[in-house]
Length: 609
Ligand SMILES: Nc1ncnc2c1ncn2[C@@H]1O[C@H](COP(=O)(O)OP(=O)(O)OP(=O)(O)O)[C@@H](O)[C@H]1O
Image (cartoon, rainbow, N blue to C red; front, side, top):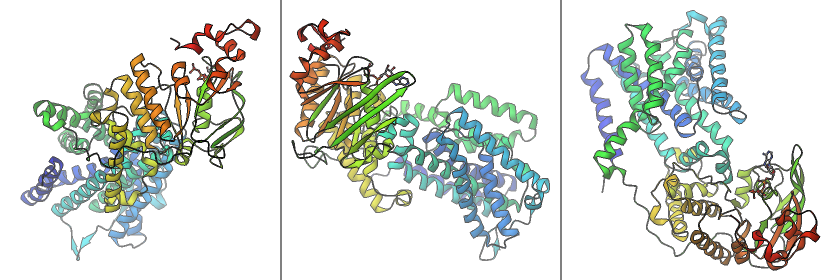
């Protein structure tokens, strides 16, 4: 059996974690190991928030405080068992994580960072000023530390305990992030709209990332309070929030980044303790250096160097064997089956004086390919965005397979069976081609958080099945050979195919394609036309926006024409092509009478530029 480098690294680290504290007798060095372990514990969760889901927080000292004061109050005033109090501190910090996550629904980037600063300051003020409960500057003495069989832990045992927590957190988070949750966090970071459109509930993922970071931070705070048997407001400073963020940014948003960050910065912190006035300057300089010179942090820079030296390290994980024949859509519609798949009634959307969707009604029939055409700015993309839940309509109603989806958010619409692509590509560019397709399968992976965290057999089995399906889908669209490549590194035409594959992975009953041929050369357009034809032949229902009339005429059964947000024609392709209102709209003339024959209309006859 081939042992993975990560497993070897973990074994080596575990041996060192046991042996080094056993060998050391110097209390100061043991304390440094304890502190590095503690900072890693706090930072590994923060890495999920910052490195994986792309959100910044400058208020995690507040969550550290939540854990520390919970354990302090429960053991001193509540008389709780210290182990139970330690567990409770993680839960309480997690609840505070939900609180700090609430603003992420409305704000992101620097604004979110400002809100988290506010949270940190409020917590700092509460524990400083509310003396009756938190003891203010004097703090809380007599915090009860955990003991094993009545034996109080010494400095060496504390180092082991914290390293055990750090190891457990590392293993659990690695297991969690290797599967659907890791992909969902990365997708949220890369493109929120695209993440929603593949069925990922962006807000839920953001809250989860905050909660994970809060739990590890809270546990770190609780362990510190228990080891010191004391906590006061001096521990809970803005500097601590900066320091924790620095560990992640300096170390780098990867598996090993926070490990390196915690070790290097703890050593530096201990070294600079003699010159406290230099500490802030050094951290500021390091942060700037990390952001400018090492965008992927120390771990990123080292791994880049290692990959140059040993190219075999860059080899992608092996793919599962292609099996089970050609990919088939999960939901196929019998052509001309009775009923309507989607019914839009009186849809209306206005942006100030611009009305891109003006009382539009139409139906999509199962098993058919519908094309949505119209001049630039006619409102096609807006209509597609309304149908897919990306933007809400001001008025009107949408029914899909009998359900009212008018007010549904994009992730719910996707889960019900509407998959889509975007006019301006919205891939997850730093994820692999395979992971982009796996992200599309997200709404159909049923295994929950705990099974994924613990790596239970059900989660592993589901992940293996998903990988097999993704491989078949990549083979279907002709991208299997590029499965391990970064999506953003593919040529443009292949990126379009990948986005189509990702949309197919969501198991759509209805596939919405927004200008799939935009930017493609004639050969690529021809290949794409053939691919859409194959998808149609498999019984999939498609609604397609396209300017390339050759493609529209080749694949569609019905054509709906919009102009100035309103429906101006609908029918079979040939009928629409000859419709004088349509010709007039494409020529940009107001009067139908002025319009010439269809043959004179470039947009209707052939591809526009
Ligand atoms: N968020 C918005 N705010 C203001 N105006 C908008 C917004 N989104 C779209 N519009 C306007 O609505 C109109 C229709 O835009 P839309 O992108 O839906 O047209 P389209 O038919 O898809 O155009 P194209 O073929 O060029 O992609 C345009 O005038 C556009 O500027």
